Image (cartoon, rainbow, N blue to C red; front, top):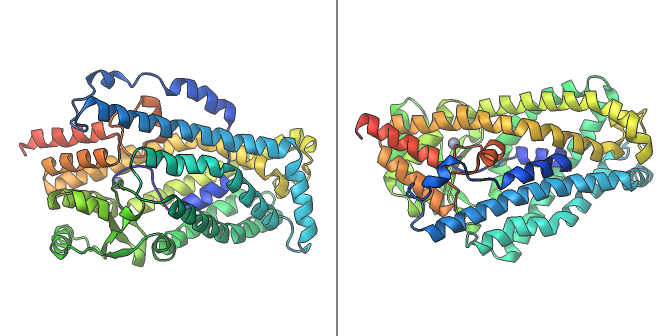
Length: 431
Ligand SMILES: [Zn+2]
């Protein structure tokens, strides 16, 4: 992607697993969240992103609100998990689930189905606020409320269709291999992620948007020639009706093997000059050349191994200590599906630590090199800077977020750094 937080099929799996985070830690962080915008704040206004101070203020407010909502969302998930445990709800739901299904199948699937539906429902007001109302208040959405709800329902249905068989498989493995399950599941993540990466562009993404070959054939030819000169075959450059949902612009690459493709939002195509589109594509091409998708899969797998191992080591002692109080079967350990909220809390806590690390790797080892590649390939630093500025304005980006926000949430370098990089590159080469 050229901007923002990475989308993709892995989100479904992560959402299913990482439902919770540690509320105390989140609140501790919250106090530092709104700190000063760093040293660069003093020089605000000279990065050329926003025409005036009022628009800049608006952008900053938008970003701070969204960042707060991330915290609120984590705290809310943690609270739900704690409540489900403390009230004995989780244990009762497990008993009920066991009664309604044949013994052979067990409680996990009906339990997860009910828990997912319930948590989606009680989180809906928050999702609506952060996913739709905020976007509308800042004039960034093109969707009606009805369309938004329709997409949420569709997303939830697809999520459940993927989640339920997965849950059945996961619990079968946990039962069968009580000591080794974390290693087996980690190993299975690789083929599963590759399968999902293959299927998402053809089976999931088209359920939400229309994808078609780039309409501007001259531009398509120019891009293919650019790629071919580097010995890269671009299988497909597609455009997508991103304007169906948003006024924001983006481009990304998806798929592996046969479904590998570069996708441009129509919002981006409408606003960017051909030179700017070219430089954005060169960035995406940089990801393909560097095989970044494989790096991301490797990174994701390493994270999964670390996370599941920690959960395996921590869950046993934790369950023996607090399990009986919540009606959990400490002898069965993680095999007891009623312990899922506790596992969610553990996963959330671990990912609070690992996500910033993942983001740092993405920023420094994946996105910065892709920017450099785009500049090397096109030699057009003016177009690079122009594209970054437009991207920032269209997406109401914060060019210079507080250090803590960048550390926790940014998978890409902040725009101020990217623009400075582009300008520096141009100055060095007199371009
Ligand atoms: Zn990128």
